[in-house]
Image (cartoon, rainbow, N blue to C red; front, top):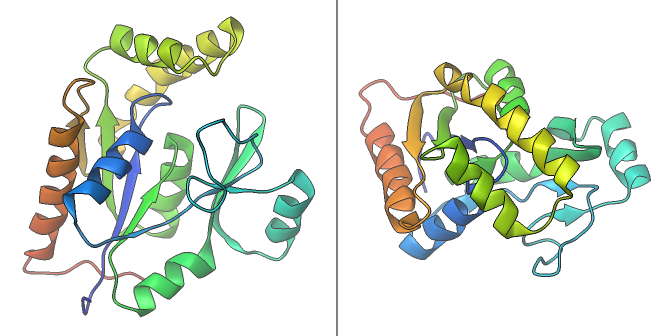
Length: 198
């Protein structure tokens, strides 16, 4: 429990390993509140509702939008993704550091709404490495894969919007998680603490 809990936003292009980094952080034993994102996309075979995402129908999601229940939401590749305000607020009220995983578009919105958050951009070692990750995921058609890669190249140019850039090596996900954990620990030692208001 912290007097001034941190909001840490982890972002990066599709396929860079945001989920793997979060899983790695959990394995380090670092005590964070991991925000579960709501989405209207279909659940993949290896996913669990309420753990990987809150899987909502489009109607359910749009109802939450109309009730202003999202801190941030966006439509990405034809599906909605959003971070619910209540989940973040409850964790901060308990003094817990909050980890939020969003796409680059979502990070831009967060930067406007919560400028004192810690923004971490995950970078692939190369575009070809990213392409290989997306192919091995086997979740996209050739057309969708091309769209994701084209968008990833654009998103890579937005790294300057972030506080930290972390290269996520495919063969060393543990190092990525440890680096993110070290960044959070360094932020804890700041003389002038960040101050969050939702």
